[in-house]
Amino acid sequence: MSIERFEQLEVWRTAHSLALNVYRTTNGLPKEEKFGLTSQMRRAAVSVPANIAEGFKRRGRADKAHFYNIAQGSLEELRYYFILCRDLEYDLGNVDMVGQADKVSRMLYGLIQSLHRSA
Image (cartoon, rainbow, N blue to C red; front, side, top):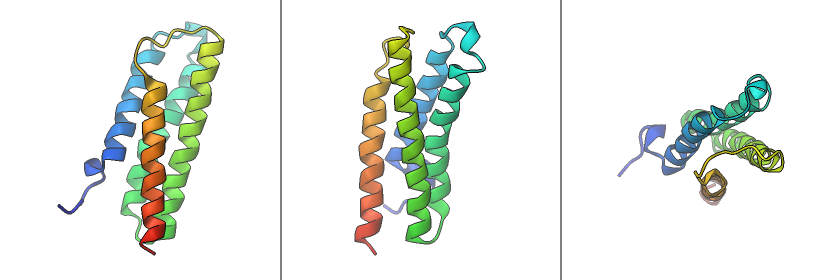
């Protein structure tokens, strides 16, 4: 099967699911975090699947890898926010977003490695 759209990428679907979970769970953060942590977490979460989507349509391997690497950076930023929420004792519910982030990270790493191997 040939992948023709970014929505067909498992890594994009997993990252999109993570972004949806971040949106849902940040609704429960304290109201004073609306323009702080909530906004930052959502921005970082959305950046991951958005950069995967953008990289998907890029033609050159290096250009694709660049956007996938940006997605990795945003994912690491989001993981820091999970740590911050934990340390501030903010309840993010029972969704394993750290596990989801780890899965996306492994998938992105594999995707980037496959680009380098096909060079």
